[in-house]
Amino acid sequence: MHFTARAHTNIALLKYWGKADTAIITPTTTSISLTLDEFYTDTTVWFDESLTTDKFILDNEVMTGHALQKVSQFLDVVRHQAGITSYASVISTNHVPTAAGLASSASAFAALAGAASKAAGLDLTLTELSRLARHGSGSATRSVFGGFAQWTPGDDTTSVGSPLLADADWPIQLMTVVINDQQKAVGSRAGMQHAMATSPFYDLWVKTANEQVNQMITAIHNHDITTIGQIAEANALQMHATNMTAVPPFNYLTDKSWEVILMAQELRQKGIPAYATMDAGPNVKLISNPADTEVIKESLLSVVSDNQIINAHPGPDIQINAGDSIC
View 1 (cartoon, rainbow, N blue to C red):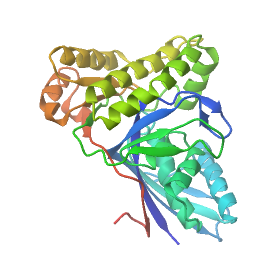
View 2 (cartoon, rainbow, N blue to C red; view 1 turned 180 degrees about the horizontal axis):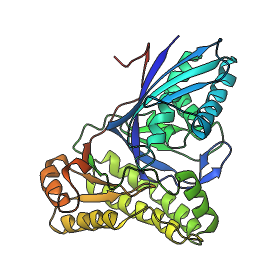
View 3 (tube, helix red, strand yellow; view 1 turned 60 degrees about the vertical axis):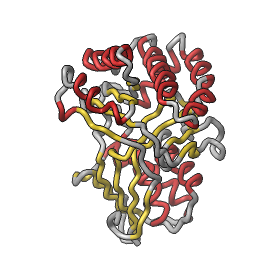
């Protein structure tokens, strides 16, 4: 039977940057994120005994090589849990610029976990889906949940995502400034492990990031955009500092990225709360109040064009339906 899942991407306010265990994908720090309504992945899966291999179509293109291998390895986890051996067909549409620092792997593997588990006959809770999704992408643990979510370190059983504030129905938004939507030169997995292995400041990053967790949780429950933004911007810059102090160093941020980061600081000096956060890519997300959208956008247009600005708000939990579409 065919099942389709839609999972939304999330942006980490406290970053995931480094694996404690690369085999089962567990993190060195607790990360906290906001799921976004604007970016998502739709994935349809069905298992077919007549197939002799898994098939994967992404954005109307038949995938082979490494992309297919990653999906098949994930499906092996599903097959093991379900006690089946059939190969699967996977059709996925990504409404996220792939591999450009917008966490496309998070929505992709969360959606794959949802659709594949149902198609395999499993009936998983959101927590169990989060644990399954982690085997494809660490950040996918959080995309199972809407609103604010966290992912904690632990072992294969305990390292899962959980909701912090699912109904984020108060004024907060992320304005995504797409500096570059092309493939990154250094992938997230390689980048985080290189920083972890070679940056002399990586252990300090872990200590500082874990100390920011309770502060961030309190700010979220208090609906305190200013404190959320201050912590998130500091955390993001500290993460990128580990990359620039790695041996050899590497950098995701461009001159345009820094123009937007500095623009946010200038807006704050004018009394407008706007805070930058950046994942493993050049794109910048501005945490802000929807009431300030027009004045922030006016400033951004001095740096980028209108079609490079995408406004997003808190998004929902994963959706899973029988059939080939999300109704």
